[in-house]
Length: 374
Image (cartoon, rainbow, N blue to C red; front, side, top):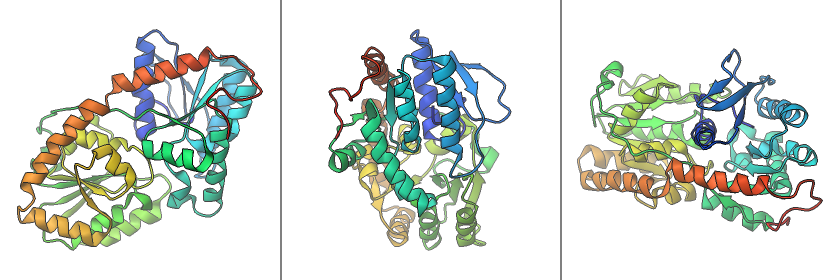
């Protein structure tokens, strides 16, 4: 609980739920996914049972209101052996679930308090929620070692690190004609349009460059119209910059990743980012914002930038053909990294073991397990 649910059509959490949940269901586990998709009528998907419940449609209240209804349903009716709650913002629901005898694994996601959309009261809430989640969850899950290090430093509690997964793919290029693109002849950004993903910097950096290959921007955001407007204003009338909006056609999106001259990744606070994994698995050379999360995922096999000006320099060098050898090396290294460290089967194995251990633990405990409370 805690996500928009499946079928996945929005973000990384939803993709993780779908990929992990269907594998657990195939292994004989009963998996219930609490969804918040208005109008959704299906009640089963890939072996998972779907329970679609309402939510308050407001940026500050949507996730928590839906998780509250989901938790009530779980406590009163479904009575699961264990609950996996995603997003530290759902921290207030951990104690009621545990009081009802349902062990809880809480997945923190990234450093939510640093997201621009939560500035002010929202940021203060997320700082409290992160602390509360770490202290009250039976198991705390992080998707990156950098997040686990932050939790250890801040709260003195270890996390179980379980990353996301991706696939090494060769999807072809036959659908590029639908969006009027040529293989290896464009640069790609795929991101939710929010400040911490640095889409504005990517557009600024590209616009100042001498690169003639187009910049293709894929993504939207439900509560950030002001930022989308700002990004589009920055592009102005530059014919090289193309906005495709959100693309939920997986085959087309895979082909966009696989055939890009470079994938420009500006995410900075979200831990292991699924879009970055998909780009690497598709063989896209990465130009990544310089932060510890991106360095961890790529194992350093990327060009890094921390300003629009630095990105401009990289793009100018690419335009001149000066970085061709390095781009080819990074493309191959990215695929190898995904094959070695980010496979969904291994991710599902880790979740299965963790959740099975948790479900078998004593219930209604007055103190946390040996993993401890700070």
